[in-house]
Length: 599
Ligand code: ADP
Ligand code: ASP
Ligand code: MG
Image 1 (cartoon, helix red, strand yellow):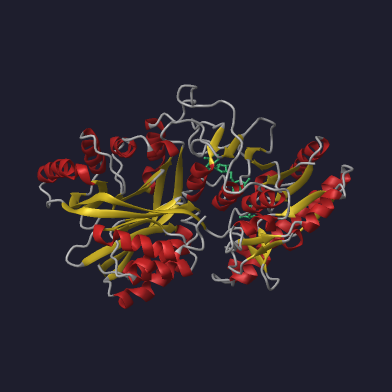
Image 2 (cartoon, helix red, strand yellow):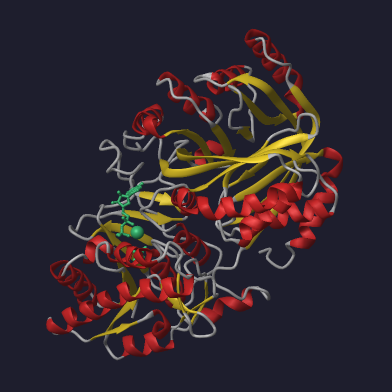
């Protein structure tokens, strides 16, 4: 008998009528002949309310007690849903995270799932019961209750679907599918029929709150078909699966509205400093993004990056303790920045995407404070006041409101999943032998490590910090038929900004001609360049949210005395540029460092 996992989010179980509605959906699946596991969130805004109660007492409640407190929200819903099902004449049993067998590590409030023991769940299912599982929670080795991070019920649901080898994981929510951008922000956003794991993972990680990004890591790793649909209607939703909807360069736009931008000013430009900074931040389990370590001037460099606004205080604590340690000058920060990102598998093979985005923003007179790119995403940091204009401009520029036609999109029928592991209808321990060191379900998996030795790096060290500059640079470069790879633009200082990017070495001269002319037009300093640059990349899944990975890359290079220039991070890939001469050595060091995690 096939198993279906259904998950209902907070709004979908906000009151008892809605809980009865969820019960009916579960009953319908049971009547269709499935064994049903329902994962639920806390009712409505319960989790926020619980956190606020603790904060009425202290600003810094201990994370263990916060987990104890927050987990109570889901416990209310599971009991009410089981009561609802019983009242409708169905057998049901509610279970907490510990009772369903979800074992996590001990990182309170951000715990990762290690194993799921499905025995008790299977027994209940085989007894003809609908199993109601509390989302968002687990238990560590010592029996302490843990939670998986805000929005983590999605992750519970997909993880259970993986462990049970479920036919599908249905995510019932208050929108009827995945849209090209948040439909509450932009009414003309379009619902997609399907989206690839890679795109959804990146979008979720960059702010599309419709799915917890870690749930998509599970979905990809264990080849779970995820169907996102409405709690309040029966229309078909969107399938998250192995393949994209079509071949358009951009699948969606994500917005992270509350980003904090931090800059460590005047960091001595030598091996090991990036490592020290990011190791400390990784220890605090803070996910950094938009890391821009620009090319050093006078032996000093600025290291800038963004973190979610909610992590600002914790990040500042870390940085303040580091400043004198690493010989930096000071820490600067800015709150309330908005990170706008475009994501699409198609952009890897289609040139011209970056300049189109920058041009769309510049036409609205929107200044870009930082830029980072990586594989299938481009992010730009803009002022909060420009949020709506920026989303609309970028969404329009890529015609995301227009349905994918047969010509643009390859297939009409949604594809079933295909991932790393063949699913088996057995306990999750069946996956473990696939890799000797593969102990935890959420452990990082690395697909490959690559070295591209034929690159050159160009840096424009002194450009006017005003709307349209990035667009101008990359339009002119594209007009010369040059494909750029990593792009970073730093935060501005004294009204000037720095842009660095890489180009294939055989077109360096052509690219230099373009940027020299631009610098002359702006009466700016001459471009700098390193003709012999190499890009070292680690490819995998969930690389950004596993906060320790970038740190281990930096540490490995620092231990080998290799200096890092440009850094770019995404969920699929973390890349650094190094000097050509160090490339091979870096590759060997990485192969050794990540030997145990490689697929
Ligand atoms: P739940 O409580 O069911 O987990 P969430 O509030 O976490 O629901 O997620 C659903 C919300 O995600 C929607 O109401 C929508 O505003 C938001 N959202 C953000 N980006 C997208 C997107 N690309 N597609 C659909 N919804 C999105
Ligand atoms: N109740 C938790 C939260 O609000 C988990 C979830 O809803 O997914 O973050
Ligand atoms: Mg959610």
